[in-house]
Every structure is written in C-alpha cells, then in structure tokens.
Length: 399
Image (tube, rainbow, N blue to C red):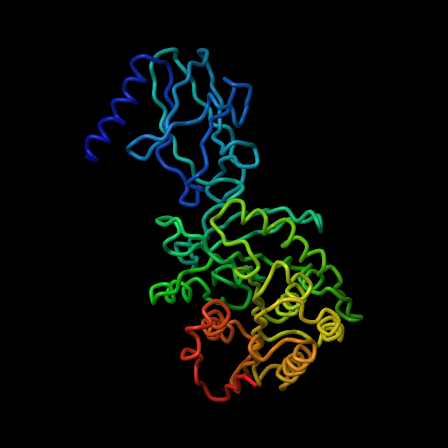
C-alpha cells in the first residue's frame, strides 16, 4: 500500500514537470512545524503575498510538499511561509534568511529545497546542547510588548505529542537558559526534560513546559514586583502580564494545551520563586500550581504583605522548597514564614507543601534533584505520596 502511495506521489510530481513549467518541491521541514499549518510560497510571481490560497503547497504521499508555477523566464525569488510574514522560513539558527533565488529557463524544471527553521519557532539548540530531542527553541526573539523587549522562549513537548491527539497541562518556568540545557545555563541546568521523559516512560501522562529566558541585566527588575533600595526591581507585574496576556494565549492557540487554570502552573527558583508566588496569587484565574524553589523572599517584606492581602481566592497547590545551607538557614526560615502566612491567609494544609533538606544549597543541582517530587506532588497528586524522597533532613509539612 505504501509503495502504491509513493508511486502515486511520484506520478503527480512527474506529470507536473511534463505538462507545466516550474515545480517547487519541499523535501524536508523542521520537526517543530505545527502539523495543522499550511505551507505557502511567496515571491516575485505573486507580489510576495505570504498566504495566497492559490500558492499553498500540496502535501505528497512521500512526505514532501510541492507546487507548480508558471513564472516568466528569468530570475525568480521566493520564500516559504506558514501564511504570513511572521511565520516565514529562517536559517539554521532560526534567524532571517535571504530570499531564495532561481533562474528559470522557460522549460519544465524542478527545484528541491529544505526548510531549515521557522523564524517564529526558532532554530535548533546548539551542537553541544544537553537538551533532549523533544526540546526546541520556540522563538529567539519573542516580543514582550509590556516591557518593549524580546526574549528567547524554549518549548518542551511530551514524547507522544507528535503521535497523539492528546491535550496537555502547561508549566511556565523562569530562567529558561537553565531549565533544559547546560550549554546555555549560567550555573547548571534543572534537567527538566530528562526528568519528565523518565516520568513519562514510567506512566506519567506528560506536560508541556515553556521556558522563558531571563533578561540578563533586567532579571532582577523583571522578577521583582517591588523595589529594593539596593537592588532595584519593580517591573515584575508587567513581566507577569506578558505571560498572562501574550505568551499563554500564543501557546494555547498554537499547541494542544489544556488551557484552564486547573492545568496551568508556574515554577522558578530564587528570584524566579519570588515572581512565581506573586503571579499565582495575583492571577488565580490563570494558575493553580506553583513551584517556589529557594525563594528570595528576603528581597522585600511586600512578599508577605501581598500574600496576606490577596489571600486564598481559589484552590491552589504551592510547593515551597528550601535548603538549610542557603543563606545560613535564612531561606528555610523565610519559607517557613511564608508557609505560615499563607495558612493564615486561608490556604489549607492540603494545598501547601514545605520541604527542606539539610544538604540543600542555592544551586541548580539541588533544584534538579527535587524537581520530580515537586512535579508529581503538583501535577500527579495521587502518585506522589510514595515518591517523595526520604532524604536526610526532609521536613514535609502536612499539618
């Protein structure tokens, strides 16, 4: 049957060569090409219209895409798109590529091309990357209109995403440089992709993870809703609005997500933990789960004031993690104070988890080690009870 389909595809292409002028054949597309998208060709032959219906490429039985054109003799310039100029083909790194140029001789000809990337979905991770095969760069320069900046966005898709019709919960994570890939990290990686792939192999249903790079010099400013006299800050609310109003709608529109609050979480460490708790309390209509690792509550007393003021407005699971070796024990004390503050603000013991470790340090290796337990507690609560690691110094709060 497959041979017949392949032959049929070949016959279609060869008949186009015999009876028409120029056949453009796309032999390969990036692995992250959304399967529901239509491919178009735009160029000198159609006034560079990126989504003209008559210039849609047709999928062939052999996995290629093709279109037959009748351009004037001479130089032809073109590019492939997915319907508009924001979704145009790019170079191997996901950046802009020059127009394709071909000299048409006025006779039956075929041009075979490969699309290396899409500008809006970015290129592949670096050659020395430790990211798993199911991690991709969604965009190298995703716009943050709330801050007039751009940012690289990472995307982890579950192992069965391409072979199923399932919809998945989504976890948004800060410091995207450190979430999946040691080659881009500034202090190690969380190994979120390896951990989730292992849990999937053990029966977990899977989750989509969106990693948002920090803004470098703007990191503290973006992760702090309040100002600190010494360190600055103050743009955290705008950063969270970016996730809520811009990034999440894009992810929900382009990927098979379960968009409701019950299936949406956020996670981060240090300042990323600070902004995570702020976001979840500020937008309970959007988020219902929070990984708050080694939180920098020291940055501002407003952290506690905000928790008391907002209080509980919806059932929310919050996982607080702190190590005894962080800040001479101050991070543990701060996490304990936040736990108590949240209890007083109306959250139940069932919703809150505080875990500390005597060997816990302010480091990616610690957060990587503890990610699986936190993930299962928040996203697979029925399975986690027997999976919380019984390490020395673990102090789970279940009162």
